[in-house]
Length: 246
Image (cartoon, rainbow, N blue to C red; front, side):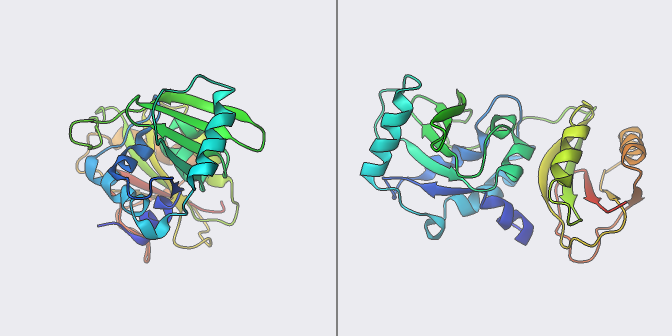
């Protein structure tokens, strides 16, 4: 079941399309990119719930879509495909935490999905600049997310910023990402911004990753607990890291 925090993260992309009825194909929006994969189908399904909600949509009419594609076509050869899905990126911090494809994007950039050609483009309209171009990775026969098994030597991390320092989550993510053993699958805000120390909630099922948890604890100078603090939403990650001021 999607949580309040998940719902907030889900609104990272607001659907915009000239074919408003479309579109189960939005199931692919969160799986564009090269290097990063979701840790389970159910997690991806939960994150997609808001994307497929018509109430969240702001329609982009056919003329606007045509004008947008005309601009992009001057920068890159577009697939010969009608009615691509066009979306606006609204929370790049959350998206960049899960997929490198979005790391150079900005809020307001357009995400263009050519479903038949399996191609995705991030375009900055204000600068008339391509931010990224890449393939779409999804199961075309079922429309389901293609999940991959997390290697045993990697620790899945749900990273939450529990401070008022807005970029602390991104900074910490980038630091941890340099260590192969740490796989950050989610970046979000904690239930409140008043945490005074960094906390690691250890949800691992056994001791097989104890060494990795210890390494994470030392790097963040954090305390390790077994229970989530009050008001914090549950997570499927092996550890939840809540960043504090210290």
